Amino acid sequence: MAEKVIQTENLTKKFGNFTAVDNISFSVDRGEVFGFLGANGAGKTTAMRMLCGLSYPTSGKGMVAGFDIARQQEDVKRNIGYMSQKFSLYEDLKVWENMRLFGGIYGMRDKEISTKTDEILTELGFINERNTLVKELPLGWKQKLAFSVSIFHEPKVVFLDEPTGGVDPATRRQFWELIYQASDRGITVFVTTHYMDEAEYCRRVSIMVDGRIEALDTPANLRHQFNADSMDGVFQQLARKAQRGDN
Amino acid sequence: MKQFISFVKKEFFHIFRDRRTMLILLGMPIVQIILFGFAITTEVKNTQIAIFDLSKDISTQRITEQLQASEYFTVTEVLNNPDDIDRVFKEGKVNLVVVFGENFSDNLLHTGEASVQLITDATDPNQASMLSGYATSIVTSYQQELMQEYKVPFQIIPEIRMLYNPQLKSAYNFVPGVMGLILMLICAMMTSIAIVREKELGTMEVLLASPIKPIYIILAKMVPYFTLSFVNLSTILLLSVFVLQVPVAGSLFWLTIVSILFIMVALALGLLVSTIVDTQVAAMLVSGMGFMMPVMLLSGMIFPIESMPAVLQWFSDIIPAKWYVSSVRKLMIEGVDVVFVLKEMIILLVMAIFLIVISLKKFKTRLT
Image (tube, rainbow over all chains, first blue to last red; front, side, top):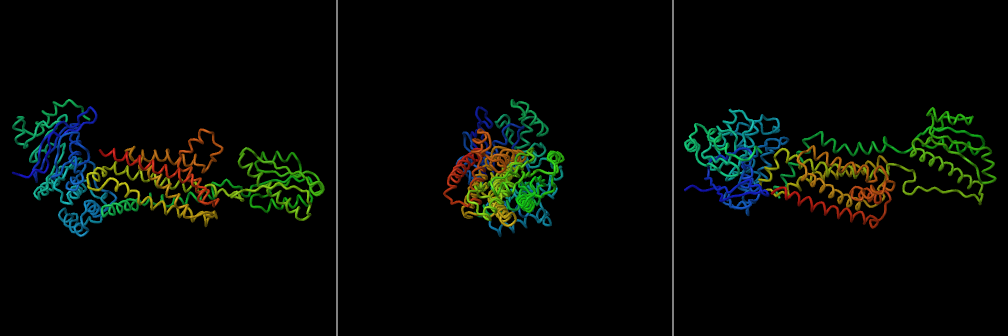
């Protein structure tokens, strides 16, 4: 049986009377690419923030990378990577300075940082951009770079919050290749997205509606279960049930 | 620790890469000191005056010469007719007319009393009172001269002494104010902008999801601005000593201590603002309107607090810069012992502790 890297049991987050995340229970295997879908306001971001140790659950349990998200936030944070939907590198720092900064934040040694930097830049074909300020790179490159930085310290899990917003399809394809490479190395990828074609790339997908997980399975099984010919069809059927508005 | 150092490095990079902002931050104190010191001066220099002399004797001549010789006045008109007084004022040729009565010398020597009339254009009351003050002191000094010459024992000379600022240099007044203003700008405004920028750009989320402790993020942001404010503090002090000739009369050590206290208050204010607002523009507005304006208007930097309405006087008490400016004035210009600024220091200390506690609490609650 595969190692469970993320595991939640009845995880709930309430803000006053509002239940943002309502009793969700699921688990993600090591190295899995897990799609976390839901309309705006369905509770994705809140759930993800709890898993990242950014927010305390109101009730329920969650384990990430072997640590309790309510009590061992420090350890959780040390073992995860995070890429936010807003662009998350420093534009006024050079490419290598960004890498050194994040390497430093995660406590990597200088030598380790510099070999890893060269390795990643070569792999991405960015080696000539080492000393370029990040703001001078095209968006697609920045996004790829941001992903590489988020897994720079070889975390057990990486959380990607709508990582490919505003990127053209060709770059998105390349971006997903990077995701697969990371997954092959054993890094679990937890990704939220709005693009239903990207949902197809995930090994398993969960769909949140009004704070609850309404469906969770492989894309193929979901299509079969909801009798739809694409993930978009599945999503539409579920999203229509939503009571909450768009925010 | 290594986390912290790489983070501080990054903050310095942010500042150094933004050449324009850095130039403004480093150049601002220089420009302000020079502006306040030379351009926006409330001092009187080379004011054009007219003399209407009915005596034309040795004493009036000497006084006229002394007025002319002083750097404050230039005699441009000599009047012969009382009607001319009105005319020269209306034409805007002069700001002050000195009128000597008849038999000035005789009266002075024999009765010990002679009249000199100082007529000023009081449309600018401040300037008018200042001009008459200067002229009076020149006349008085002539009287003193006479007294020594003739040893007339019964003559009573009114003595005007300007404490601490005998030449009435306005630089003495605004240097502490500029210090307060610059420190507020660098520490409160720049710190709040720097923190809010990370929120706005979304990098704050990434940092919070990393193992670095939030307190380190904050401290690392403060280190460069703390350094910068010391650079500015030394610039201001050097400029005021060597360019404006305003000496540091008191203890430099205590001046530094009280500045550090004020910097703490300002940094805490900056942090507090950053927990309240979400955009850099808002941060700039809040600290600009909320901190900089009161520093300029209510700290006693430009307008004396004593002449404000009572309500504003109470209000000025909660402005940290008021206490800072007052203590710098005492320490730097009056050169008093540190015990005389204990009150100010205690108030600043209490404010610093209070603000740091509140802002750290607020910063923490934002995270969960």
